[in-house]
Structures are given as structure tokens and as C-alpha cells.
Length: 302
Image (tube, rainbow, N blue to C red):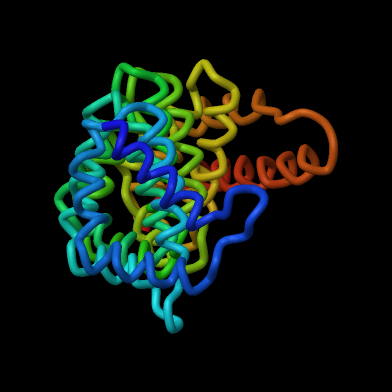
């Protein structure tokens, strides 16, 4: 193990320099080619649980540098992983091992910077595990898993849009459990993240589909009543799209009209604070209240 640790320190110095001597470009290129040729990336991932704390730290640093290195304008390490996608599955599953979970999280987030690797994880069976990992009892591991989950859903708009289009029902079935979780942190983080990726331009067609569904409207209405003001405000930003949608289906109109008094009362009591943000919020709120009242006055929901 001591020998392994020394070698990792040597690799790190070769890739990054030692603070006094800058890395030698030719040596770095040669190292990257050899690491890929000799399956070193696969070896270090599978042996990660056997390494000590310092060695794992050095390895994560080397991993980050290796992925970024180009040789003849090619990302050799990324190509290596593209030919050995099971390594990504292994890293995801390692969230179940709290000893190395945070190291694997850092390595995964470095991978997710590359669209092909992010796309693989999204479409793999192991992606589903994130819905479990973000609620693990160990707070640090759950938070780290959520950071990785967030990167997967926000880093590459087009990749995410393609994934959500192809897996709409199963994804939002799972996501509904996060939004209705008894855990405050899970509810708050997943609601905020939902706003982030649904309101992204490449996902506008997903948002249009989402706001047609009564079950998701009901979730937002429940979150508007949450005891946390932060959750109420985040829920409002998605709820307003249901209300403002010019193509509301009949079922959505009926729910809004039937619950108009409670909704208006909830919205009246909802404020964000001071400043320009507050002004915009109040304007939006006024328009939404107006639309809910208009719907309640309509006798026939055609």
C-alpha cells in the first residue's frame, strides 16, 4: 500500500507539477496514453475501496487532471471511459459505501462535464439509484449524491431534454416521491432543482406537458401550504405556470376554480421580502390571483 501511495503522489506531481517545477507537456501526454493503454483507470476505480484516505484524495485529483488532458486534440481518458461505460455504473453504486462515496461523487461530477458520459449515466439503469441515494440517512453522502444528481439534470440542456422526452413518465413518477418526501431538505432541494431544469429553454416542451397534468398541479398546491416559506415560494414559481398556461385542460381549470378561495388566501399571504424581486413577485402573484378568480366565475369549463 505504501508503494501504491508513493506512485499516486508521483503521478500527481507529473500531472500538476510540484509547486516549483511545472509539468512537462510531453511527459503528461505519454502518461495519459500509458494510463489508458494499460487499463490503469479501470484498476484504480475498482481498487478505490482498498486505498487509504490520502491515497484516495491523490487519486481523485489525478482523475480530474487525466480527464482534462488532451493528446492530439483527443480526450484519451474520456474515450477510455466511453469504451468502458461500466466504470460509471461502478462509481454510481459506490454511493452505497460511505467510506468512498464522497470520492466517487467528485469523480462522477468530473465525468458529467462531458456530454457523452452524462448521457450514459442518465440512460443507464443505475441512474434510478439516485432517487434513493439523495435520501440516504448519512447527510453528507445524501447531499453529495444530490449535487451529482443536479449536475446530471442541468449541465447539458440538449442531453437532458432528449432523456426527459424519452423517459418522461418513469422519471416524473420517481420525482414525485422526492417532492412529497417527509424530509424537508429533500422537498426543498428537489423543488428548486425542478424549477431549474423545467424552466430551461431546451425543456420548454417538457414544461408544457408537465403543466397539463392534474396530479402535478395537486402536488404544487400542497407545497404552497408547506410550513416552510422557502418551499411555498419555490412552489409558486411552478404553480404560476399551471395557472398562466393558455392551453389549460378542463381538469386543471376545474381544480383551480373549486379551490379558488383557499388558493387566493394562500397567495395573499405569500410574500418574498423587499426590493425589486419583491415587486416582480407581487405583480406575478396579482396576475395569478386574477386568473384564478376569472376561472371561478366561469360557469362552464369548455
